[in-house]
Length: 267
Image 1 (cartoon, rainbow, N blue to C red):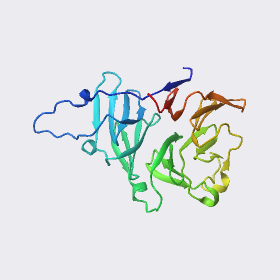
Image 2 (cartoon, rainbow, N blue to C red):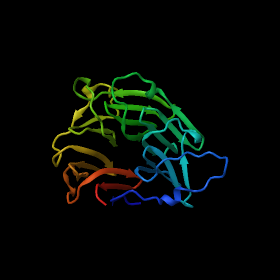
Image 3 (cartoon, one colour):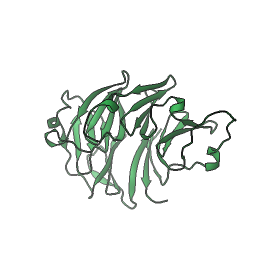
Image 4 (cartoon, rainbow, N blue to C red):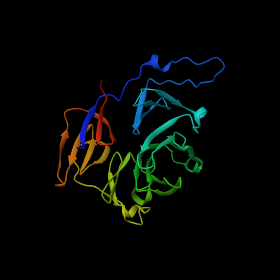
């Protein structure tokens, strides 16, 4: 299938009336608000969404809506980030306190190590990237890597000058290169480098187009798509940056299968 760029103004809307199904007397059900969707990811059969920190899904085949909470095995209440791992058929759930769940057909497996780690930095996660059975968590201080097979933390990368903390907005991988986006710089390194834990092995990209703060950099096929100052730019195999769409103002880029979704702030 050819890769296409699809521009979405909004993710999708769920009717409030659909979320108010009746429940039998004597049974329990959690009640959350599901009308403020800010995250979406999908498996082959379901679309998962987060609204006000709560998780639910819509079945692509029959439209059935399912809600998830501690009553269904989750290990937290306030979800900050979700992403579906197609290779391992697992939904990765990161909570605002740093707790991590792996939700699959086998149930829920919890990774509390990041949550339990004593640190002064904010444990917020801004982006989840999968590559070769490893998760790259873009954090407010750097990058945390997780082994998806062993469900354990591997490394922490402090990529700022002199190993200082920098807020990483997202990571993306193209070939053997990993890129990490911050508001002021975009760092890159070789994935084959055994010393990624050292800030000295990360370099800053230069000659990037546009102006303003960097928002996201995503590898999309053979292209790199940059969102900066609300505008989008593309670098192809010719290594030349060009305007992709600077006519609108964009707030987020989401890679979903063969589609790249660009979100605007307006409806």
